[in-house]
Amino acid sequence: MEQAELQSWMEEVSLRYFEKPFKHQARFNSRLRTTGGRYLLRSHDIEMNPKYLSHYGKEYFTGIMKHELCHYHLHLENKGYMHRDQDFKALLRAVRAPRFCKRFQGAFKGCSCPEILHNQNFLRKRKFNVNRYACGKCGGKLRYISDGTQKSK
Image (cartoon, rainbow, N blue to C red; front, side, top):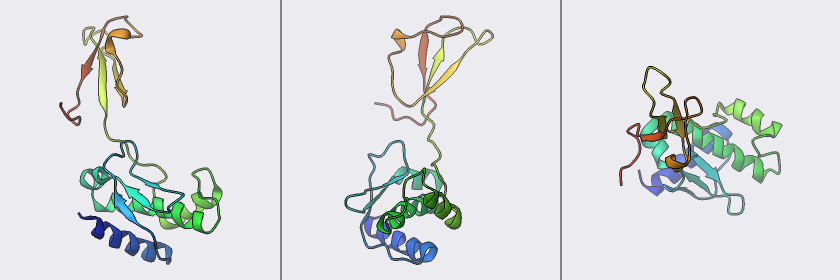
């Protein structure tokens, strides 16, 4: 999908669910890692994570767009646009937008003790040095276990 298609899709979603025009720029930002999109307060632009479109599909991606448009429209109307504000929560419910994004499965760190004993798995987004830490149950060494979604370098 191209940037122009995203722009027209965002404008369409804004008119359909909010009955208000989206007058700023929508663009893909593939550097986003932990979020499906973000609303930029100073420029009023919206950046969307293209991985969520390819991984979860158009229906879920539309929900993320609605979430970001809630931030957008409430901020322009000088109402509570933050996640904790009641105006934001009420508008999310009204347009049936998700409050939080689903997470991508990250990398696993695992205990090296035999499977029968503990075999603890630790889901971690951030990398850490497995040589500096030990299993909390048995004191065994940790090892990296990929779940297949990480890029290999």
